[in-house]
Length: 187
Image (cartoon, rainbow, N blue to C red; front, side):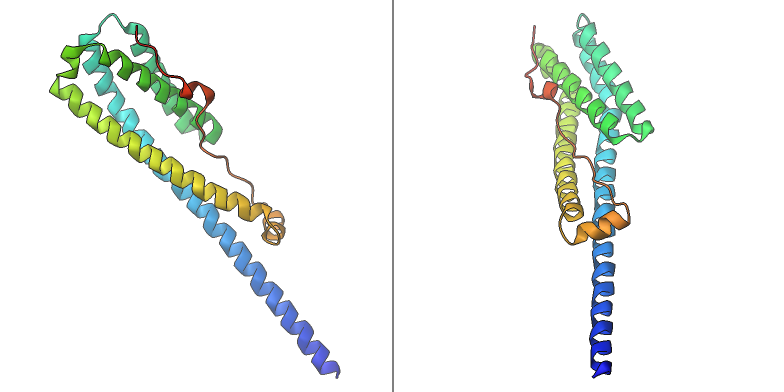
């Protein structure tokens, strides 16, 4: 009779160990997907940052008196590049949102110049920027979806036990800030 109880205890212990290993591996896999999602956003943001100087120079040739907009875009790009080097996700998200607003303002200024709208170089840059913005939007959505799954796994029972034991921490969503919801004003 004693060996039956011992066998049951061993089976329960083995089941718990297997569950713990599975839960830990699932958390690690999700954490790695979050990192991959962020890396994909990073690639797209780098491409956008590389495209912006060309766009600014093209618009600058037609709208020389719009220097405030050019300064804003240039400063926002510099802040975004600096935030990228810092490794701080929250700072990076804020800087990239500021850059997005600056780009929207630049595009709004460009719409006021019909001769610029007919320039093939500008049109090509606009197409590239639009494609990049769509890729960034998709990458942000993917990232936020993975962050949601990861954060949920960390918070739900019973995987929260393993998450607490191994210090898995919640990740931050890539959210638009309040200023990015405003429509740029063309003067």
